[in-house]
Image (cartoon, rainbow, N blue to C red):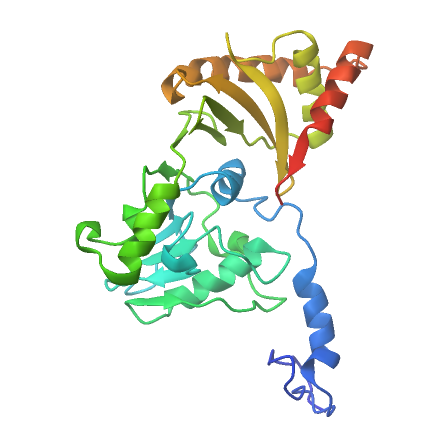
Length: 307
């Protein structure tokens, strides 16, 4: 038998501990259990948690420049988070050494933060000009919270298409060009509301939407939304209405229907005013009235879990 840490190997390979059993029936069993344990709020503790969730679940095309603890390694001029990369690559090391990290990929464990950190570490040492394949992260590996500078701002840039995939999009060819064309055709027009973390407007046939990721405790937030809804102050103006919410990565995402003529700029002011009303409702500890309880029940019944 070996002493110390047992390395990760293929599930059907002999366990490195020397037991004579396959890895999946030996030390792989505890490793698999640790890897599949769900982390309810994987982005908690990161600057811009609400925007991380929005970019993971709601926004088609966006990028964010990331700052690493201790600075960038030699030969890596930048690290950029991207909602999605061509052909769903987990990460990409450009010819110039820059790293792109994809956020919307499937992950191998129940901790998205650990999986992304593992991909990022492998991308930093990948050969320039190569994509980074998916892999299983070690159960004790670092998380994004360990690798990123937690004092640096998190400032998403929303794009109309995926031209950020390549350094010269006009001359893209082959599979990358085809993937770029398909992705641009499917992208829903989306914009981030200035000054409001996690708030994203999107255009849909017949009407637009505002989807606002909020980090308030779920029960407290639902109570506050119910108070405003019962009072008739949950809308964002004429022709708008609060229609329900999503739940994603431990956070609640209220959703409003907007008239088709209300763009992102027109929605920003009413959304900011709603934020002030919400702050007042969150401050209340009074028991819900019967009308407010009915409003809360309606909001809860229309809640959809994305992840």
